[in-house]
Image (cartoon, rainbow, N blue to C red; front, side):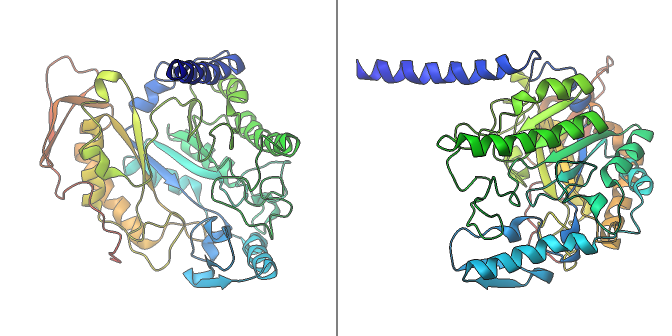
Length: 421
């Protein structure tokens, strides 16, 4: 029958996708990879979105997006601009790119940042090594648009990775597979082309030669990261979904694992990941959808979120920070639900965290010094939670039956994005 034919076709497609990932890599991916042991024991991670755009104080990368004229985009100091022509768009995008010519974070001190992160309870740190704007925070010959070609002229990711490892913290590399400064992604010219978010402005299946040129660049950048820095975590953002955005990251998985057998990999919308993907800033979902349902299945998850009250990922000079009590409440919730909490702390253009962020980090430090064992290396323990009032964990290696009952000072999952304090 026709329904049977449709089922057979769908099943065949599923098998092909799964087997293609297996064929590319001799390594297993998913909950059984060696690196999932450290990842599961590291409940709290720090995200760092940073680059030349910090000089503007606007969101990273997204000021480049214009899908149709007229379009509204962010300019310097979060001002909104309306663009009507390709010429105006080119001038705006060029001004964004030119921020690299004045990027000179002379106060950048990765040793101090690593110390502050560790004291505040973070166990791994993920830096935007290359966001969707295409600026590389690391040494590479695959693009001249990198930190070594700025007035600062030093390898910001390499310096941070060394500082983190000195303190026993794990090192993560965020990579955006959608590079909006590349003519092979937004063609024919990334300065003037109308481009959608997380997708090329052409169909890779009908122009495979152009797409292959783009993939050669993307895979080359990943190769540089894997061989030079051996990240413990590769965090691939959107989009990696076949067929329209098939980045074929399974092709570089053997290289990643060869240079760091304990590397953990997330590919958003991809054909493989080592743990469960969640939406950005979706802590509230853990109240309802995660925890009891995740643990029996053995699936670890991670929720990325932002410390700034404005919910902007890159540094926002007009924003304060969410209170430490809310960050801790969310950390308790996720620890009791079997998940990791990845909290973004954005540095300024000078390479330091603003005073308001340092205050929150200090408050996290004080809490962790007394109570950190309830989260670090802990696992969920039935009944996991009582509403939003109590959360229960136990040390993973505990044989005594002791438990931790955590009582948050605030309700987790709250959206305080309207706050500026």
